[in-house]
Image (cartoon, rainbow, N blue to C red):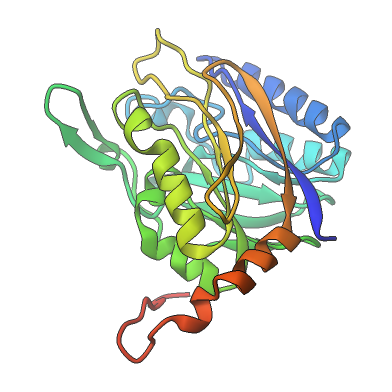
Amino acid sequence: MATFRMALIQLQISSVKSDNVTRACSFIREAATQGAKIVSLPECFNSPYGTKYFPEYAEKIPGESTQKLSEVAKECSIYLIGGSIPEEDAGKLYNTCAVFGPDGTLLAKYRKIHLFDIDVPGKITFQESETLSAGDSFSTFDTPYCRVGLGICYDMRFAELAQIYAQRGCQLLVYPGAFNLTTGPAHWELLQRSRAVDNQVYVATASPARDDKASYVAWGHSTVVNPWGEVLAKAGTEEAIVYSDIDLKKLAEIRQQIPVFRQKRSDLYAVEMKKP
């Protein structure tokens, strides 16, 4: 199966968790009816984004929100990347992505490795580490189409993570993310295109829709980029479903035409995985 359809759900997030989950499931069903085989929700899809919200909205995995995702993945017979939710485990909070297969099985769980702690004077200061702990594991899952690697938002800035995933055979990298109005226009698309070209992979990002009244305003613009660095599909700022047909034959052709993997100088440098 060299080609499959992917859908990114750019969800408008409210303060009511149950409404967020219900509406997310409705969009997932709509995407499935349009032929999507892999569907992704945005970062923090069941909760407003902010350190003050994470403790209040946090759940166990499996838990209330992820149970609904499991059910709808099975109902629609799709691979569902559950964006992320605040996860509580053993007294710690994580920003966590759960992935479900077409039979509803939990296939993967990824906890955001790089916490979003930044300070851009006069524009934005944010410290995820005030409430969240960092994950310490890579996460991939296999589909009949290709292997998929997972990151969340700020992880996209770290080229090494994408390189490790490419080394592990991933052809699609998915980053649920919520860049803001400072970093979004500057780096959102640039980073996606960079990771795609560097590693000759497809890169997909699922953002919440923009809410100008929220305490943290997401940039939006959920995007799919191909291994040539071309933007295949891109949302605006409003709630939407973005569809893109992923062509793995195109990926193979690009890797054949510009064989960077064979040309790397492993005698001079290496990016290595220190922990599985």
